[in-house]
Length: 229
View 1 (cartoon, rainbow, N blue to C red):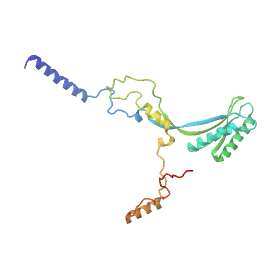
View 2: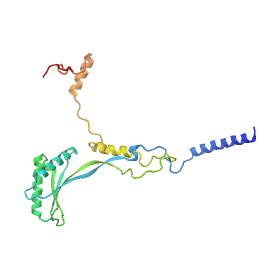
View 3: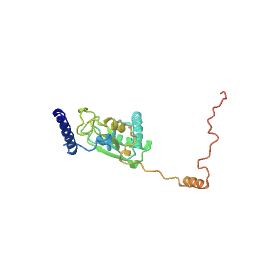
View 4: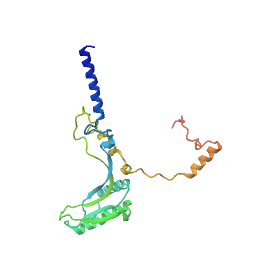
């Protein structure tokens, strides 16, 4: 074997050994498993206040405000209900008028269908403001994701086996925007009661070797009428 070939063979063995040694040793900052999108930007649900502000009128709730309260109550029901808090300014320009407006808002909510036990009337310090509004609010769960997309790291480097800074950002942000009931993030919804009667009927038919499907509706035929109307 020529000296040059022997040198090349020796170098190849040394490189292979160095590679194995590098794999066996623990590299600082290295992680064993790359994070998934939901681990990198976890999606959570937190209680957030949902509030509307109503200007104070001498005649009580206006038509526009009544419509706004109707939409507000619809969102409140979708969010699962809870306590609706009405806050009237107690140190505004006219505390007495603010109190009457608070009562008017209470009556409007009851008229929409909110139970009086779910309404709480409180006061807040308006610090003498002449335009302090009535605040109507409730607490509801809201899907929350950590801020992302602020900056990008070096996409060509993955020596530590870590995911890139924004990996999973769009996935969880889109999930947060689309989830109808944020409570589903914390726990699955409870199962509805089973139909024990229907279940027993199907089991009995199965044991007898009969069809378990429901009877066919003769009126539910996919035939297009040729009649001229």
